[in-house]
Amino acid sequence: MLLMERPKTWGRSRALRIKEFDYSTPGRAYHVVIGSKDRQRLFVDPELNKLILNTLRSMANADHYRLVCACLMPDHFHVLIVAGEAPKPLSQMVRDVKALSSREARIALWQRGFYEHIVRTDEILETIALYIISNPVRAGLTDRPEDWPWSIRSW
Image 1 (tube, helix red, strand yellow):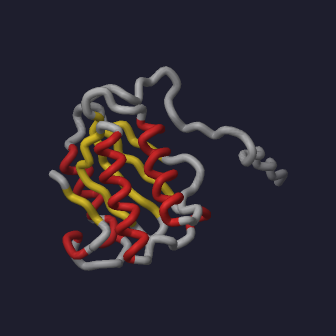
Image 2 (cartoon, rainbow, N blue to C red):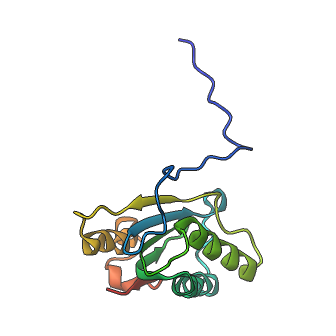
């Protein structure tokens, strides 16, 4: 069997955003997932985790997003946000969080890019939020979501 060589993906843009989609529409909700650099377990230090969560709160507010919830796992980060009035485009808000947290931590923290799920109007935010904050339970890191110290719940 002849195996096809995988195409080169490094060194060029691999944008996952939908072309022509307005990522700055007020009221639009997004579930964003950002991986750590090289999927390293970087987010195990309490001081670093506090810095990241505080940066997220600050940038979400500055960029006009309502933070519904977030969960920082050892090697990735889940965020559920809703665009407010006149928000920055989603990619800019994520870039702001990644850049500021890496600069303050004085280490490269994040993978290139991010994944986002555009929440459809028929989806219930609370269901998505419960999925996000239950991540540490599914990963065997805690028995109850409310015991995980690196989550934010604002709903």
